[in-house]
Image 1 (tube, rainbow, N blue to C red):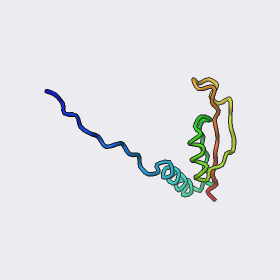
Image 2 (cartoon, one colour):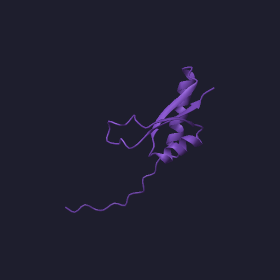
Image 3 (cartoon, rainbow, N blue to C red):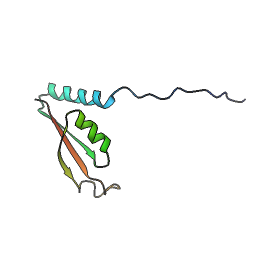
Image 4 (cartoon, one colour):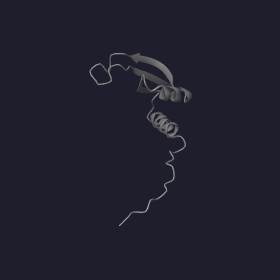
Length: 85
């Protein structure tokens, strides 16, 4: 029996999942008494670094050796932080 082809609507991502996720982490941190949120991403994640910057995160460090034993040893760890106070 032949299967009928169905037209599928394009997949839509939620409006702003990174913003909501960051807000949830920040709110949880605040309830726990944290004063700072820290995060790590890789040097090849330029769009992510830019997005975190728009959310108020600041570059606070980099480590060019952290991934040395991994398949992506040519990347660096990028550390960002945001004050919750």
